[in-house]
Image (cartoon, rainbow, N blue to C red; front, side, top):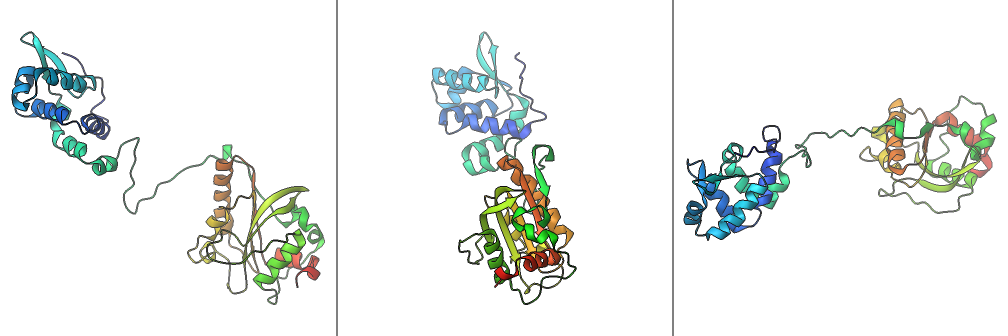
Length: 294
């Protein structure tokens, strides 16, 4: 008697999916499968299957061989002639296999190792290795474009008189970025430019600005209507990402930026830099380039 090599016990869904796929839309194959797995008789001859299905013996042999090759039945000799033997696993699950074979939606929804499905409300965690990423936290003192601010020492936050729009225009002028950037909900960032110089190297950068309309410590929840502005910021085709605020920025903002920077680096294969301009660093830039912030 042939010994099946399919690991039925530890791969139940995989084997049901396999059997349903083999049965597919073939009417004759389904008839042969049903005939073999109907009733208490463990082994059935070609003649018996032909009689119960109405198929010719030749057709039974063709479809029976296909089922045997795919290890859904055992092909054996009975009274010197070809016959087919049930496999316990498929006999036990025959109704579900038939249901899966008849429904593409049910087959597609079946969870297998190759086709994992998450339950509603569940979370899928994807771990990215820092070993394959190149990321670095930077500050205003690493950006050559803001070199004049390096010598400014202040403990004061950005003045309330400097609005978000005014600060953004000032940054554009400092960088020499002539483009127009209008705020609307669908934009992934407030300013995108290829004119930032990081340690004398020209790189592309995306900025998110948060004005005085936001109060208190800046947290991820306050960034965007749905708290998703940091994620949208990292959708930009940039290598440098900055978040600017007129006051204190929570540690959780940097933590989220760090995780997104790793993902961006792994996916792009490029080094990624990220950082924040809090109230004091914003004021250093404003003080150094005051004439441009009009």
